[in-house]
Length: 119
Image 1 (cartoon, helix red, strand yellow):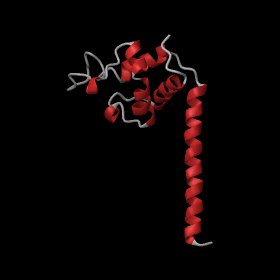
Image 2: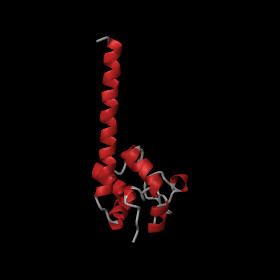
Image 3: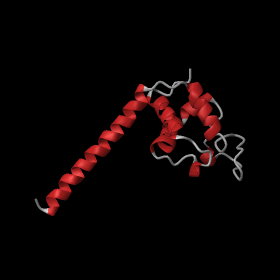
Image 4: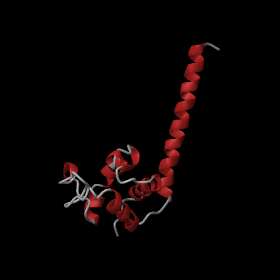
C-alpha cells in the first residue's frame, strides 16, 4: 500500500472518530435534563462577574459587548451565544478566570439542547 493511500485511509478513520465523538457529546446534552435553576447558579458564579449591569470582576466596568446575564429572560435570550462561547468553543469565561468546570459546561449544553426553558 502506498503512503498516499495509507494517509487517506488514516485521515478518513480519524475524521470518523472525531465526528462520532462530537455526535456522542451532543446526544449526551439532549439526554441529561438540567433545570434552569442549575444553569442560573452556574451563570451567577461563572458569567455574571463580567456579564452584569454591575460587574464585580477586577478591571471590568461594563458588560463586555453589552451582554448582561442578570435575569432569566436575558440568559434565555443569549442561550445560543452562551452555547457557542461557553460550551462549543470554550472561549468564555475568558482565560477561564472564574474556573468553570467541564461538568458546568455540559450542564449548560444540556439545558440549551433541551430548549433553554426558564420555567
